[in-house]
Length: 374
Image 1 (cartoon, one colour):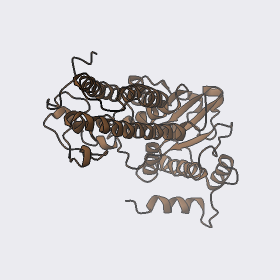
Image 2 (tube, helix red, strand yellow; image 1 turned 45 degrees about the vertical axis):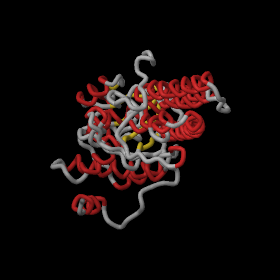
Image 3 (cartoon, rainbow, N blue to C red; image 1 turned 60 degrees about the vertical axis):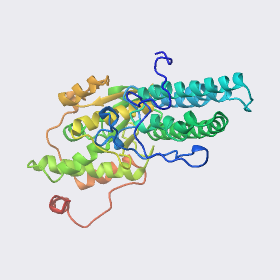
């Protein structure tokens, strides 16, 4: 896309501008304005953040963490943003030719903000990231006297470089959070599989999905199992849900890289980050969790493990492979007794186990089933 066709003068409308939003602007010395500006509803409906977007995932579905980091650090900070910086004159000379040169630099900077905003919006669903390009001193740079604009451009570019480095670090933290196991492939469990198939710590995952497999349990699955432990008319399913929930508690308490299934498969829970806004349909939330995992661990493979055709269809829509466990691991109801739980927790987490209590298994289960719930 040609930049010349999209560059706008300072007094032009923001309609169609991927990096512009109505905002709370104030100018101090040399036109300085806050780097982190407050979002406002603008006249153009396309610029409004949809309800809940402030809690949306940072990256778009087709963007991996590695791609995003490379673009931010090499494409922007050390690439196009650096190119803009080195064209700024070190000193403002007098004369028509020097003024024309500085105006060309300023125009090139304006054009670059448009192009960079488009590129950012292709990779990031968080609109505020691209919005930073036309926040700060942007408008003042386009209207200030040339020498002041030159000085402001130096300061603005330095702040943008710092900002995009910080965004890259946020993406890197997400990558490290999910990818620390270093598996070749990741199997993502759904609620149906945890309740109606062989206990997840007993399945030979390396045999079923191949060597180098790790097991991820999304947060939504943990919550659904907790709900099923007391909100179902099937007593066998309720007891099994309570048993699986206890095993998941031991996984969560163990921490990263500590819970291991019988065949040596790493098991971890992908907890929601603070402020995360869940999708209204649990199956969509499950697939979204698998997509976040794929973004973080690419090029490792991510497989959604589900017998539910709805889950598998949703996964396929986003290009995620999905398959059920073989029927050989399907069970009917099933219960987890106290003694089995203690042994299972100890095997999952060395030194772990379910705390001993004097109640019988049946009495304890009755207490869990009747405890008050929010």
